[in-house]
Length: 364
Image (cartoon, rainbow, N blue to C red; front, side):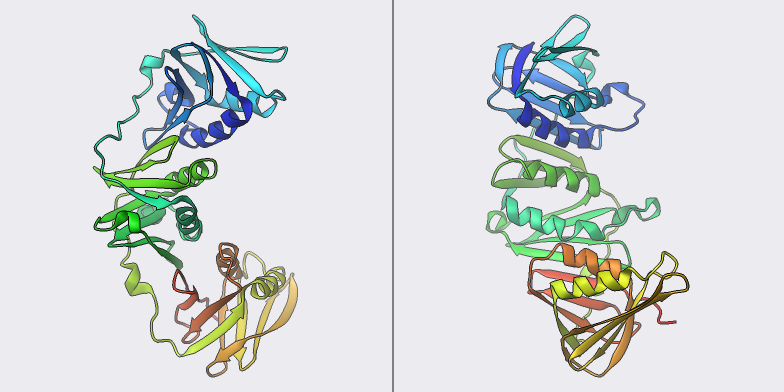
């Protein structure tokens, strides 16, 4: 095999493919990325839970074949490469890489030992706009858990019913729901609990690929396809919470907030919290929101912002980072916060497309 490829395109694709390369594995062959050249150049990586296949359409192919290249070594070479292109050639003992006056010889394993990529033919899939899908997963993934004991919460639930597509994530202390209309899935039912690693891989692929993505699920796997890439990801098992039952309804205390001003005030107050006292107190009254924070060694903060508040004066405490995480994924100028009392979950919304439920902290 002998090929010449654009360095910029290879570097971008390599960053996506390494998402599927395990840091440690009892099967050393998985530390490689498989490169195959025929009518086009195809790269594959897998850790057996997630597999990614990426196709290059503009590579120069001199000889066909396939090789295995160590993912970490290639990443370091690509980071230091000042050229516009890189050449790769399979040898008896591995792979020769060259650009400019620099040359590298990498030992390689037998490509036939690398797991085969699954076929997507015959899979029932639906199409959704790239930008819309990215927005939904970015607006929810931050709420997912990172705990071995709560395995079913370590991902994002993707759900299609009729023409409505939803993404949901929760860590038990907060829950995010984002929704949109999806004409491409009309008449199709779809439900997949995707691990965070799979969500991150899809986000990376869409950052450098086509205008849409096709999704499907069966046999415990998610199938995703773009113009140049295919991803298969093993789904999480377990019971995801009945999220619609968690979302508060009928709250009477409502406050309209400027998103950027709220984020600024929270960052100021957060500077006066500590890991032991990671809480800010919010006092709502007509026309104003006062946010206070204090710690025995961090000092004390009191910041005020104008708001449109409907309800009786009340106090409630939150982890400020939870609010800031929600502010980061939104672009809306204002958000609506609905609160009941100091012990009930709060609901923050941005129109009908975004709902964020946050558990309060004790005021004591």
